[in-house]
Image 1 (cartoon, rainbow over the protein chains, first blue to last red):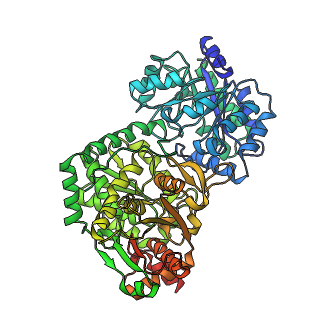
Image 2 (image 1 turned 120 degrees about the horizontal axis):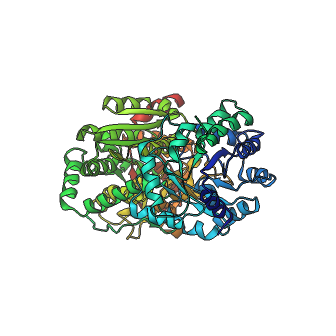
Image 3 (image 1 turned 90 degrees about the horizontal axis):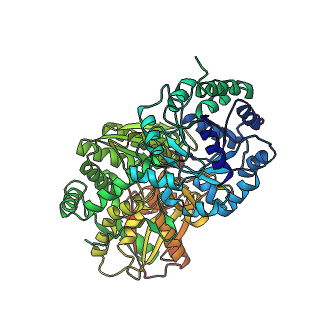
Length: 258
Length: 381
């Protein structure tokens, strides 16, 4: 079993809910400080976005974060170099789009991720039907696959069976972005996926507050939090400010909030 | 009508279905519905009837006598500019709108660049009583205001897209994002032979009426079959009628949007194809005077034809294109779209250089009429 999945299972089995923050690579000069702040606030896994010019599944906050990172000159190489220099206490997963993965070849891309110290990879526009080549190249890395509320029961089983590290359950039919409340589809989706796999199942899309995080882990093993953090960074929040937000979510997941 | 409806999710290594999981069931639904409909004589008859009594098909094949004499070739123009709404886009849109209705969808979503596909979709929406939402880049809205007004007159909602290069590429991305939120009641009426499977195959089938008609209208197989290529739907439809002949198939790209000629393998908008991009895979902006060709990718079948040599892809620049509009207008009394003028411009150059030899017969698809481009041409006058 790979590093990421060993870790996520251990955390889940210990009774702790997983907190997985997402940070767009290269978003600011001090962007890796946000990773440290997230780890210090109790993150269990860190997702680093490799920005793409045409992020099909992302809402306004991550679109703007991606544009800002690219405008600053962020590249795959610069982000991987930044990450390779870090010593982080938790596994790091890359999130990006198919064109960046296949541009220089899946083999090259996965080797570059491994060399930079990544443990996993999420590519939302490579569904399970198109994933063979990437799965073959991703030795040593866990390829995290996504399920959505529209995914049929049969596909949920297939996706969970081929996913590594965790299953990324997309809480709603829509793009990434903060929502006031977790949609009703989220709990039902997490429950149905957990019924067909013993992998940890994490909910993402719309988890943006202690309340939504707490609601998500009624069924799920943890949460992925991205847009709300990136919006804070775009609005000028420091790594410390973002750490405070995540500390609040950590407390909610641990059942320590009021 | 040909019955070559073998399903193709791949064209060689190109094509596929690279979309988020949320869209997979919707793509499968469209694939299933289209496959059934395309084998259903009732559906085929209804589409044929509506193309005839509403859209004006068959479109004529016009011998371009004076331009032929000047160029020393026999030029036959397939007149998609005479189809209702002024371009070939109506062929695909009527097919998809009837399909959407058959699937029980109440609403059409579309992206548009030049506005031709948006106008066609708004037209089909009005005809069939379906709400229509069109995504259009802000930059295209500025240069195609007439088409924006046409769409709104037809009752469509036009949503400006302010991200990225604010052109067709971004309108397409935004339409896909929107479709994720609206799959239950909405059909994404994609405008070209691109996107995730089944779109490249389905749109090619809806457009093959151009090539099938032309094939029946010519008295002999032409030496050359020429069409402009942005996403490539008028070319794919035209080529489909001549793939099994000796005709040389020529796709003409815009110099600044030449995905086949100047691009490299990549994945954009749900399919693998040739794309304009940088070393990391960030998508480059296309630049063309013709908004309909301002797209950094190309339909996967064209990428495949280029790799096998079944068709040849060439480019022409904006200056030659504008000159071609004027030359066709003054010799034939036809003001064609800037997109279509790419095909005319290539022929003018190729006849002059001898690449197309004297006496050759050339079938050229005029994909649309130039009314929408008058403001652009007036600025240059």
